Image 1 (cartoon, rainbow, N blue to C red):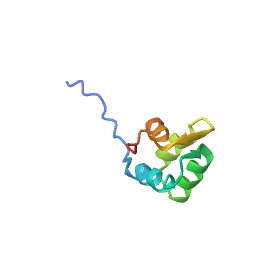
Image 2 (cartoon, rainbow, N blue to C red):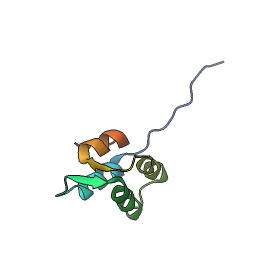
Image 3 (tube, rainbow, N blue to C red):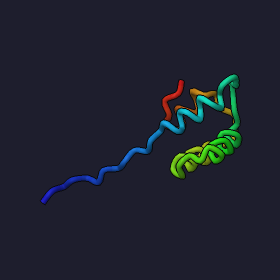
Image 4 (cartoon, rainbow, N blue to C red):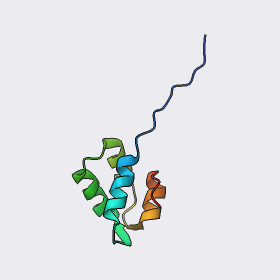
Length: 74
């Protein structure tokens, strides 16, 4: 008998990092709504869309958005 804990697969965050790189090009802050709209248009996976939708309304710098969403863009 083994007590192996279920392995939770981490989502691939590369599409998120690429989206943030793209939308913040030349922009200092972007609203949660704009990030979400661009993510939908980019057809990001549902799990990433859910993370973005869960962000509080407001504007975010790229490092703030990446920190809150689990991305690595800085």
